[in-house]
Image (cartoon, rainbow, N blue to C red; front, side):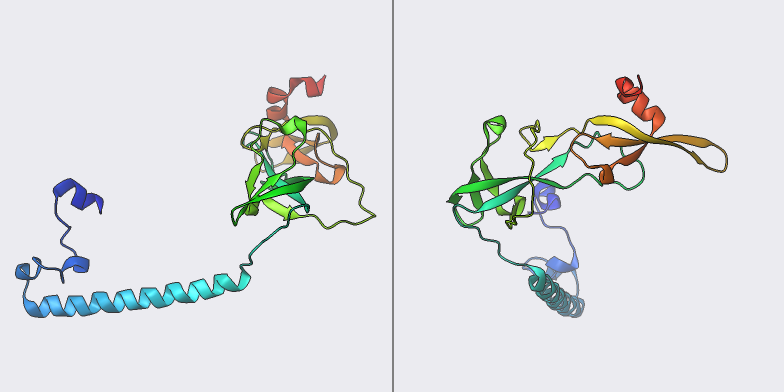
Length: 206
């Protein structure tokens, strides 16, 4: 029920409920009939709009299914506390793996064969967290150890400073540093504020 009905023990006097028993006596029959027809028309048009939007979404929706023994990547995300300057979210989302599927749980969940390093994480995941791995002999995969938390998040750690730069604005100057992160390549290095990096990672500037 609506919060109003739960609080006062009766439904709110609105056009949606004017056609119900007990509400007609409050207003004239002509007004009640007109408002009932208007509410019916509104509901029909809302249903039409919902059906149209659903058809648009169904065109891009696909059912993902995997079989036991397949290799898939597992989606993880960095912690929100990591500072970013410029484009936000550049380091997320990320996928780790591949891991082998050992069992299918229901219609949309799968059990993965996780390494001992991830023993604290539950090994059953929703299909939306998986991405199919397409094997290619030219791929060279490196399985670097990553400390994941129980919610599949991890904290990026800076490894070094590549470049320095001073961004000049109208009334001030902002010193920036280009930081290389532990789980990223050189192409994924990001520009961060030097003051914030000094405060959070003082050992990086020694």
